[in-house]
Image (tube, rainbow, N blue to C red; front, side, top):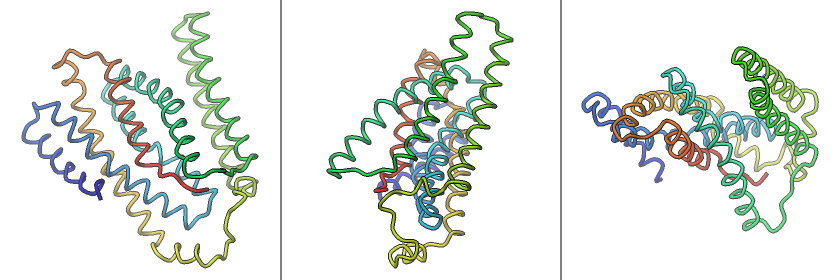
Length: 266
């Protein structure tokens, strides 16, 4: 209910952008609040799609679209030339995910469920992906400290990003096509269970996809307004791009993720 009430900030942000474009702080606050319910819509639509498509695809959708709002904001900021803001926000987001999100998930799960069950094979494969991502982040920094050549560092970074995208694609093929049985939880309901069929009949796939598309478009629009107010706000208040990225944008991303990724029993 509260998230739905925050939708009022969507027209407020648009009105401020058109009628009071010099009030950068108000535009930033209004557009930031407007993105929160849109991110919640994306999470809800993703959850509905997961009910129709099963645990494997549902987990993939949650992992992919759980970062959609963050990715949209980062792309808009890069297009606006705010590279330091994006870099600092990524660092802040990584630290926040490791400490705040992971710790909060363990605490909330332990409070609600005395004994939590998970698929160990799926957990091992995802841990392997996490290790690869950590190595990919460390390699360019280590290379820069030893070699220090900008051109070589640029080529190395692009090569690593391409490898990561290929590995992610292979991981999707492994988890969704060749070995989907490894990613089913041990307490997954039977495919023909009445409860599951009732949930699938409640909301159609088309309606969930339409809601997801509308929320994505709205998020992109509000992100463009928000990012456009960052640079003038930084100059107005004498803040650095690193401070805004690490201590404003990154915590805001974590708040989005906490709204967009509801805790699921599986």
